[in-house]
Length: 115
Length: 115
Image 1 (spheres, helix red, strand yellow):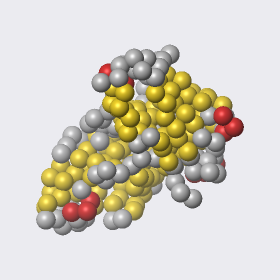
Image 2: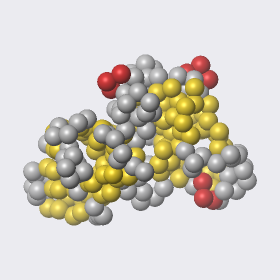
Image 3: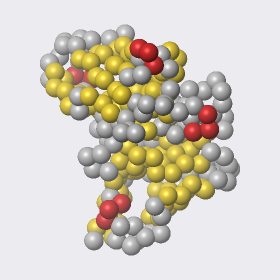
Image 4: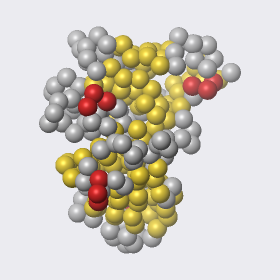
């Protein structure tokens, strides 16, 4: 078990470009979450997958954002036409079902800077 | 809606001092409560949790008790060390089969421990 991994760790992009981030959860975890964290704030929920199904999306997730989890394994988060306000740390977390369902394990995050 | 409020930081203590970081919550149901810690340059780590009223979570000398009557989950440690310097996040998650387990975080409290 290598934990949750995220790639890339850092991304600098120009306003208007598209970016894609990847998350690899802990292998036996069927639940996957994306959060966004801005400087000095706690993480904010973006979206949730159970296996390959996207079951909840936050109102924070505008139509420029899309997330997928094909085959219920890794997940990708794409931001189209990036804006400066998208600059943040994007965190991925995973958890198992059952009694430990609410214990989430976080990846190191992808720091996005939009110039 | 559900929310978490933490005391503002930074909290600056001398080594071996007693630590309290206050956390209160608002929730419509009976949430699970968590403390996560973020050490400099690292990802979020689960520190401790409590899933029902009067439960006490503990780990690495830290403790927090789920107080339903005061809707609080204050973090305490009897003797802090320099290595405890980090950002601490209080969080809640609604329970139940219809809930996704998403976490709602407070804004975080920075702890600085001086030798």
